[in-house]
Length: 254
View 1: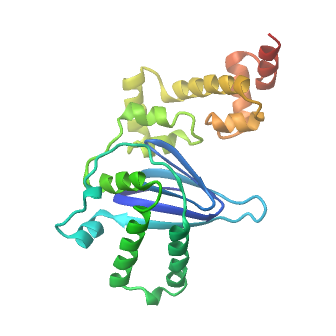
View 2 (view 1 turned 90 degrees about the vertical axis):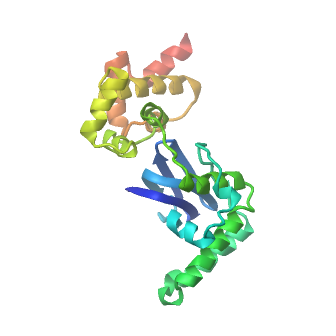
View 3 (view 1 turned 45 degrees about the horizontal axis):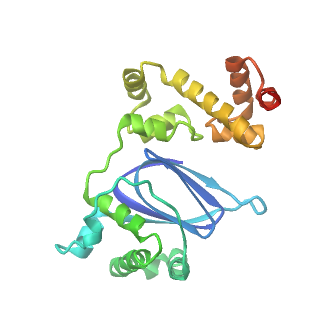
C-alpha cells in the first residue's frame, strides 16, 4: 500500500500484527501494542499479519494541519513551533494510549455517534496523551513538521532506503518523482543507472550480513532489499561467482 498525504501527520497504533512504514527518511517498524507518530508525506506501507491467526488490526489517526490551526486558533502551542528532521521513533503504548484507542471503537462501530465537535475533543485528547508519553519529543517533532518545511535531499532519501524491501517504482514514489524523472535524477547524482547501483550496493550489503550473523539466506535477501530469495541467489552468484551459502562457508573457513 502506498499513499501521498501532504500537510498531515499520522498516528499509527497496532492492536494486532505489525506495520512497516517506509518514507524518505527510511523504514519505521512497529508491532503489537506499539505506536508511531510521524509526518505522512509520500510513503509505502506493509501490513504484517500474525503467524497464528493471520490477522492484522491497526488504528490510524490523521492530524491535519488546517484542523490543528483551527483548534488552537492564533495561540499555537510551543510544541508546534519546533523544527526537526529527526527520524521518527516507535514507542510502547501506555495505559492512557490503550484506553484512548479502545474508546474509539464505539465510534468506528457507530459512526452516527461522532460529530465535528466530538472529533475535535478526541483529537485534542490524543495530542495531550501523546505529549505525556515517554516519547513526547518525537510527538513534538511530528507535530512541528506540519508548521515548517521539512524535506529530505534526494541522495539522502535514496541512501535511507537502499536496503529496504521496496521496488524502484516505490522508491521513486517516496522521492515524489515519476519513475522516468527518478532515473534521470539518479544518473545525474550517482553517474550510474539506479538498477545497477542499487543492485551492487544490496549485494555488497548482503555479503556483509552473511558473515556477521547466522540468519537464513532468505532473511538476508529480504534485509538487503531483494524481493525474493531466487532473484537474490542468482544475482549473488552472477556478481561474486559463488552462491551465498558457499560464500559464507568459504569465508568462515579462511
